[in-house]
Length: 132
Ligand code: THU
Image 1: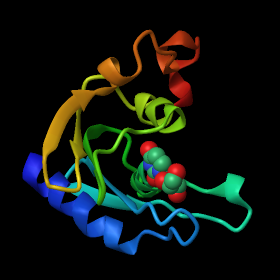
Image 2: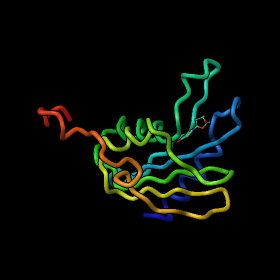
Image 3: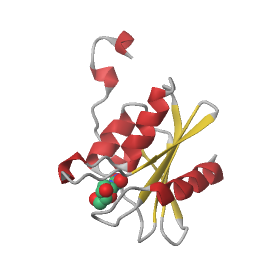
Image 4: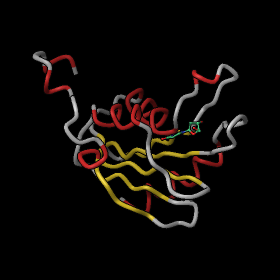
């Protein structure tokens, strides 16, 4: 799983739309048998930018997937660190799946949402489980 996700995230970042920051990010989500890619999509109205992680989650969920088994996030410079919003969006679909952080030099650090977002809020806090 690791190598497939890492490669997919690295491939995805080539498609990033980041004309303002120049900071290209790629993400890949494994759900079921499929890997879904996402990139950051910037906008001239800067605040409307979508991060790579959230666009990969959107692709996976839009296909009907609900179980995330792993995520990789790749950048070209330094090492990635998913923003708070993306941590929360990933957390919706689990806390224990592996999150591979892929640095520009190819180094991979494995972590989890549990570590990235301690004490987090999630769907089990809500009464209605059948909303999912
Ligand atoms: N970005 C991501 O795609 N993911 C993150 O976790 C951090 C930030 C993007 C948003 C923006 O296009 C660029 O990186 C600089 O913030």
